Length: 542
Image (cartoon, rainbow, N blue to C red; front, side, top):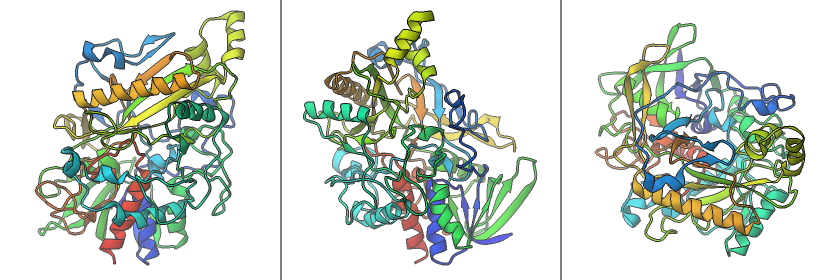
């Protein structure tokens, strides 16, 4: 089997690359380890037991990666422990856990099937972390070079948003107006404004009006369980739909790439893939694009022994730094309704927003992502008790829980990286990716500032003292991961060049968040991944 270009993975980067290639008349084949999802039939939010299930994984992701021994917890940081007023501490050990794990989806569309649709541009100051702040690495391209590709991606997906932001200037407005904030989110807006903070509509790959044959959002609040309505701009119904419409994009599911075969000159000549029934096949191409994410992309490179220059594959791993506090609002605000992330505060997003702490964060509603949109979780985590009193309290408290979440900068350190585990193999006998995660003191100082700010804003929003808080100090819990195939001009310090081409392999490209030299101050990465992928195709196939 042959193709012009083979793409490994169909998430934000792989799908955008496929679309960009097909617009140039180039045939591509996507190798996807997982299956297709049908938004009209696979997401069961119409069933009575909807709350008892998360995203309907067709291929379970737990155990696909393993974790190296985690760091010990210190009394100095006990204020960052996760807890619930009924259940008590979430982690009673003296060691950080990985119960939350690496959240991702194996399937056509990747983790965009699961995301809430936040579609953020990078803060342009976060792209110069080494030059201006002495940490991480600089991006080898400017915000201005990336901006036109942001605009292309936003137009194709139908991004909803409004307003101007000096941190991420725009050459054009948003394609669609912002989603209206829910009543509960407007209470958070009042709290921010009472403290002199800015709180505005969040840019979202979610439709505020019908667009491209898809309906507008129905505000069910369950984006993380999969959108059964088709309004969320996941990769399968946006980039891939348009790529497929050209007739130049072929998607092979149940195709786990297990090896990249190279010739004597270092060029990749074939991708070898396996199916769940154990059969092995291969496909040849003129070029190959890796878009399997910041954990599985370096794993494939390491398992394939592909030369990428400097030995930096898997290094500079950056994870999600998150804090959420939940309290009770005095009024019936219906906090189970509305889009989960319809508002945002960027005031702390700049790398120097915090005194003596490098790296910023942003704030956004956290109630739905804390899974407080149904009665079962209220009964177990908010109300407690039994009998008539329990019923009365359920009637009183349901819809009054209000959560605020801070997402922060993650800086690379020598103890955080991805390698191959010598003791655990996948179904095809290959070493699994092993995640080494360590949070230095400067990360925990930033997390402390995030916690303090979240609590202050909730109090200003008339929310009671917290009844539940959780963060990534005592439990690794990440969807956004970055940096393991860093981009840069110098092959001695980077895996890919500024256009995503691997140093040492002229026909191999990477189009996912593994190329990020820095994580940004809490921005969700899907839009940047897509913009970089379109730019990579534009530069390589100009």
